[in-house]
Image (cartoon, rainbow, N blue to C red):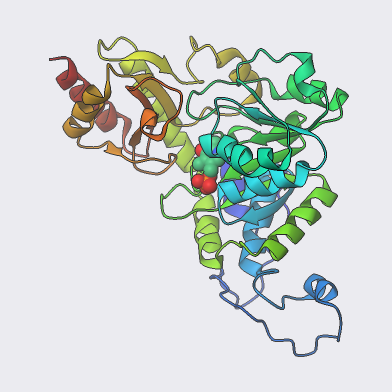
Length: 380
Ligand SMILES: *Cc1c(COP(=O)(O)O)cnc(C)c1O
């Protein structure tokens, strides 16, 4: 069953990846856990030929992966290839491009993407250029580039770049454009419709949203790229767990509800924290005064639940976390619990008191009251 393009996000999330109903089959099928599948009735054939007509071995294919791939692909507007983590998806994409030219990466994006390129690709002769998400984007950045990876909004700084404009410029120079869409999610932003060629994402964040699994994916309209990535996954052998894929499929049906509550909470927190004496440098792309807002408003369909701000220092951050009853310290984001992460702990190029705040699905009034009380205790 394919999604009606006129349906709203809630309907799309509930029905994404569904197959035609058949009598006696479960409304929501459980996970298929299999290493080998029965080969009965299979024609003697090559593995590759067999894979296209039926499952034969769990490293090459699994029905539960395919259900999640078709759901995410429908929401992204491309063909989805599932990976066991966001980094597995990103590294597969960068490896695929690395024989064909330079790689352009965000200098302020997810740190492991840069670390992978530095440790695995640069020593093999690949040229890597790092550009801040907010620019400047000089023309010569694109010269000889095979792949331009944008990350918008960037993690953790929440800067935004113009996907349509940069895609057009990169295409003129012959480069493929990928967007790390982790922070936005497929409901927050559709990079393929904006002109990018590829979406990559960690599905451990808002997409699955319950802080209980890691997965990642690539979506693209480029069928040859999707095929190469599937082959690399089968031969590389690092494959997603079917149980995780099933959990993520189950979680995807509430993505619209979760994102709506998280964005409502982010908006309420942004309004409440704006003039708080303990808070500086408050960022949320949905905020009218934010440096990223104009571009975000043009290309994002919703702004998500992640905001960021600075407290005075590490000790103030610790006091804030100790005083809060609802906000817990954890890395990652996009889950139903509100969490904070002091990114300098991981070596991100940010101030020691920089906080990435992931709004959860608590009630806005409870969350705002708790956060304000905890911040008040920091300035007393
Ligand atoms: C978390 C994250 C990743 C990496 O994903 P994993 O699932 O942890 O491997 C990549 N990009 C962004 C923007 C992320 O937030």
